[in-house]
Length: 102
Image 1 (cartoon, one colour):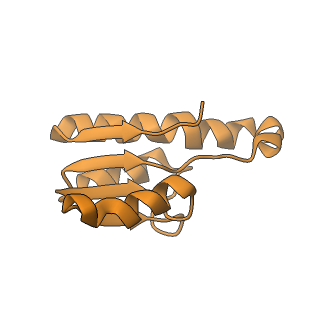
Image 2 (cartoon, one colour):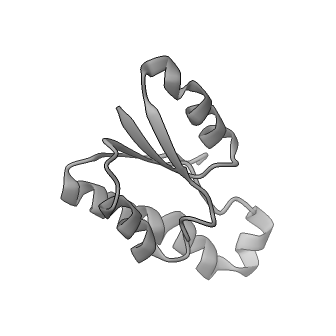
Image 3 (cartoon, helix red, strand yellow):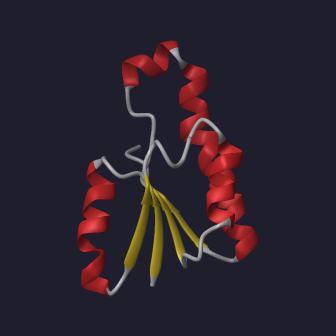
């Protein structure tokens, strides 16, 4: 099984990558430098280019106080990008998991 994970430094992304070998999964994890979550089309393109079987979004805009003053960026990262990821995964028939703390 091949996983494409958006996120590399958060607790969930770290644990997913650490535990993947336990289920014979290989992981490609995309960090901020490889997947710009403020560009939903770029996120979809990453999915279009992958050979992964499962897409997991473990990335998010988590700075709550900053989100209050930068709502547009928070919405891009936490709503628009995951929506684009889900649509791209659906087009390819890939499983998509979006993880949120709320």
